Length: 130
Image (cartoon, rainbow, N blue to C red; front, side, top):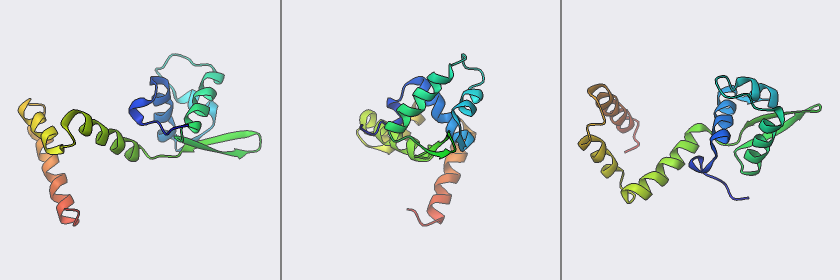
C-alpha cells in the first residue's frame, strides 16, 4: 500500500494517530479510552483503524503476549513537514516566501506571532542551518 500523507488520512485515522502520538505506545483499548470528547467507537472500529494505519506505514506494533502494543512509525514533525511541503508546493508554487507574504498581507499574524517567528529564524541562523 502507498504511504499516505497526513492530509490524506480520514478524520478518524487522524484522531487515532494523534492519540498514538500523545500516548507514545498503546493498546487498542488505551487508544479507544483516550478518544475523550469523541463519539464512542467500538473496539473493533479502533482496531480496524490501527490496522489501516499500519498498512499505510503510520504505526507499527509489537506483541506483548496476546496483546498488540502500537506505536507511531512516523513522528508528528515528519508528518507535519511532509504535509507542509505539499501544501506550499500546491498552493504557493513551492515558494515558502510567497506563503509568508500572503500571511503578512492578509494580516494573519499578530505582533506576538511575528516576534516568535523572528526568534525562530534567529535561532535557526545561530544554529548554522542557514
